[in-house]
Image (cartoon, rainbow, N blue to C red; front, side, top):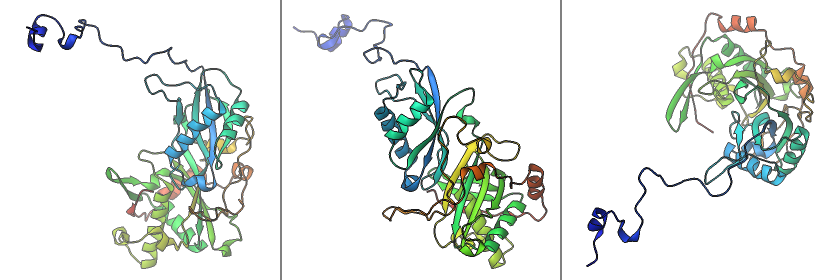
Length: 357
C-alpha cells in the first residue's frame, strides 16, 4: 500500500516524488546569465521640454528617455534582477503643463564616452520637444545640489498696476500659506518662505499696454515643494482680497488667481534655470557661459509664447529674451533688500486652495 503524504513526511521523503529540501540551503533567486556590467562613468544631461511636450507627464518623459538611450546605442548600466532597467536618475521634474529649459538627469555608462558624442546621439533619438542642451561628466556635484529654480510666468490679460500691487503685497508679507489638495489629503505650506526674489520683467512684449505681463521669480526647492501655480494662486487671492476690500484673508477663500489678477487665458510657466544658489540670489548656472561645457546654447526664454492646448494649432510665438540676457541680468534685488522687504510691517497671511495638475 502506497504511503500517504503524512507517512511520507514522517519517513523523510517528499510527497509526490519530490526531493526533500536541503537544510539551511535556500533556492537561488538570481537570474541566469552573467552579472550586469558595472557603471564606470556618470554623465549629467541637461534637456528642455518645449512646445507640446510640456503637456507630457514625468512618466511619459522617462519612457521616452529610456527608448532614446536604446535607440542611441549608449552603453547603459542596468540594474540587477529579473527585470533589469537602465540606471537613469532624475532631478525634481517640472509639473505637467510646465515648459522647461533646465531639466536634469544622469546616465550610468559601462564605458567612458565623449560627452559631445552622447549629446548628439541622444538628441537625435529623442522625440521632438525634448531637446538635449548639454552633457557633462559628473564630478563631485550631485543632483541634490540643485537648490533653487528660476521661473518665468507669462500672464495674459493682466495689467501692470494689478500685477505690481500683487507682487509688492506678496513680498511685504512675512508668511503666505497655501493649501494643495493631494491624493494623501490637504497639504499646507508657506509660499513666501520659498520665494527668494520676484519681479515683473520690464522687457514685456509691446510694453505695459500689451495686456501681457511677465513675472520672474527665484524659488527654493523645499519639502513639500512650492510650485509656481501655488504662488500664482496666492497672488490672485491677494489681488481679489484687495479689490473686494477684505481685511480678513479667510474672506477671500472663494476667489481664484484668474479672477483676482484678471487672467484672460491660462498662464504659460517656464523654468529657465536651476542649480545651487549663488551670492546674488540666482541659480549659479545662469551666470555661466551658455556653451562653456561644450554643449549647445539653450534656446531663448519664453517671453511672448501663447499657451498651447492639446488639439490646437501647436504654434507658438517667438521668444523675446535670450539666454545671454538672462545670464547677464543684474536687476535682481540683493539679499539685504529682500530681507528688508520680508520683515516689513503690515504682513498678511492668505490661505489658498490649489488643485493638483
